[in-house]
Image 1 (cartoon, rainbow, N blue to C red):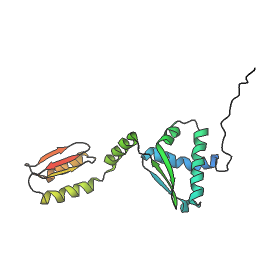
Image 2 (cartoon, rainbow, N blue to C red; image 1 turned 90 degrees about the vertical axis):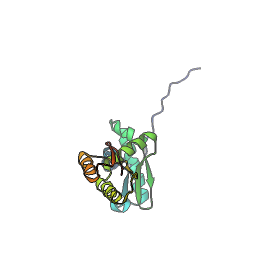
Image 3 (tube, one colour; image 1 turned 30 degrees about the horizontal axis):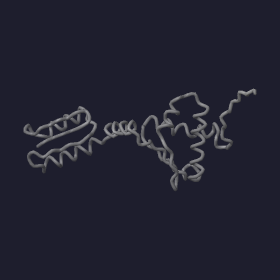
Image 4 (cartoon, rainbow, N blue to C red; image 1 turned 180 degrees about the vertical axis):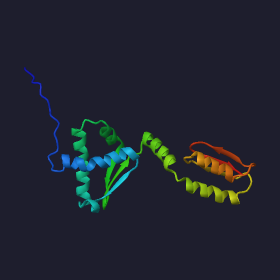
Length: 169
């Protein structure tokens, strides 16, 4: 009995949206996802496609990139994101994994609006009773530190790190 050694070639989709043109349209969105680490919404109406067509074109363009580009960064991104079709477009979002959660917390700190928490601190400090605690997990700059120390009096306890502010009146 003789056994032949056969190989099975990976089948490629036979659709018009599986093309370099679709890949060209999708690549800037993928690059933005990697740069910002934030979810992306694409409105179908702005693209001229229906939500269904946009969903198929995006998936096929992404698959074309994975199959034909040498860059591993897109393969890594594919494991981290999911694509969901909505009534009026698509959302490309980061899956909830432990690693992604840690990165999103870092992003929350980095992009937290210092004006908001400083206004909250000032309002709280005017009405707070002794031994009350103000605490926020925020990104803190050197200017933010100076602001806090100028706002509170010497009797207040202040603990400031790069990622949090704690003040006890």
